[in-house]
Length: 100
Image (tube, rainbow, N blue to C red):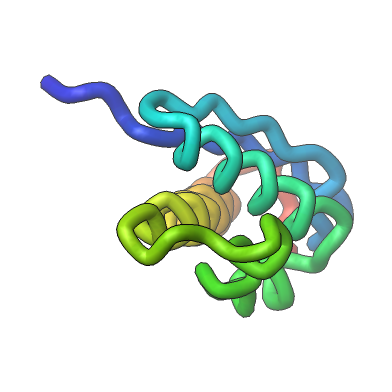
């Protein structure tokens, strides 16, 4: 089974990303895109974090070579998956996680 290219862990406080941890696996561009995404997402409420686009990551880095834009897309998609996972867990019966 291949490794997950980026792992994202979120701590949500009152619907806002209070802490974000990223563990990128792969090339240098994956690492810098994951880092830039985490900086952009930190402190945002979940709805606004979901509005982030790959071009926001590329812009925060001063641009990316066209052949490496997949790192920005991967970082944003992984953030969306982490937020979706938070919502799934919050909706489980008996969950102590308050909805955002």
